[in-house]
Length: 241
Length: 280
View 1 (cartoon, rainbow over the protein chains, first blue to last red):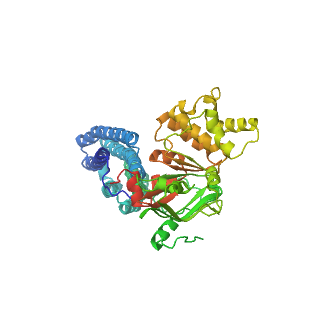
View 2: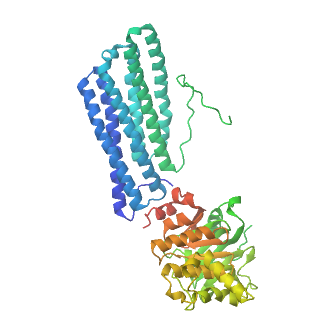
View 3: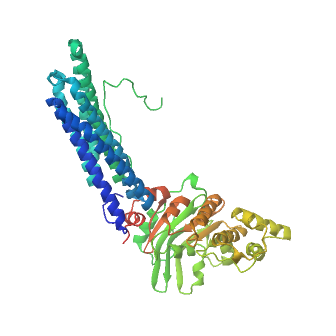
């Protein structure tokens, strides 16, 4: 039984839930913006903008704390049940995940000073497209939360494969680049970390989507087939072994 | 598998309640009571509409629902307490161990010993603690000697978690105990006649949280020894003490299922609205 957003008899409960939903929208918006700014700083080699991303991460951290506090308080005071309980648990987990997305954006921003000119490196040309998709996933997963839309959440999870494919492609081309240009290995390694950060952002957007799906449907999101990933160093043991 | 005892049952309620009977699995213990298409009328007014439920031995079953939804009325059908209300009429089938409890040959006094009841307000007899417990075994002839009766009194009080608090003052009046102790005394009194089922009608609503916790712990300990059915207004309590929950609304059984499912992911909108506090 999904949450239809109908009002509770105790109006203060709705006030708390709406405040939480508002804060989730804000932390999501700020994280998404942090990714965009970090990538712009990288492309333009804009140190000031990069510093801004690092500084603004504190606001994201603070928001996470406030969301967690209000979630705890609401659970303790309102003893929520059913879809209310699922949504509050989802909110609590989402705030943590989105805060991590902010950290990845900050991590990208922190690399800006040390990779001057890397934007001219061949493999870097794929990064803006990859980051656009990753940002889109973050935006859509939070849109799914706002609309309590399990179908959109499922779609986000499926689209994460695109980000993974980008990562695989960048990984291969960076390795090739490193072999061919040993003097640029340091900068290329940073580039690889940035791609990895974006890949992790996609995974985290999927985590948000999974929470949204669970809150809406009351059951875990079906597992998607992740396909082959050449950067997986260990094979997962198959069932029954 | 279901017989329509009363031809006035509508096919609609039959279908709905039939699907509301959860599957009984091995962990639920033996089937103790079943109800099929139970209707209750107070005069012309229908209070219960085609309720079918299974009560098993190893589960505590909770009935929840807003005031006036019929949960207490339905509970009282399970040991024919509604017989005492002249205008009440019960149709449908209710069985205890496969026996129709509304059959003409059913001894109602015996039935109420087999299906004991604990009420909202503790109602000890104005007698000593000892006599409160000994009363039932005496009239049912369960003890042949004083020693045997003493033994029943002690065992019942122990099972109700009251023995240590009252063992030195068994001749004090039952009404002199605290509210929580009185309620445990009433549970001990029900246990004393060795029932198969214990019905509890909001047993904690007059008690403070500590006394309530003691009763809940007691319910947990009694589970499996007796089939327990509890009516409660406190949803957290239903969630804490029961393994099966039935939600009643306007005399119908809306949803009956595994308690953890009902409280985390109910299938019916009415159930959801009630347990999340959206009920109009």
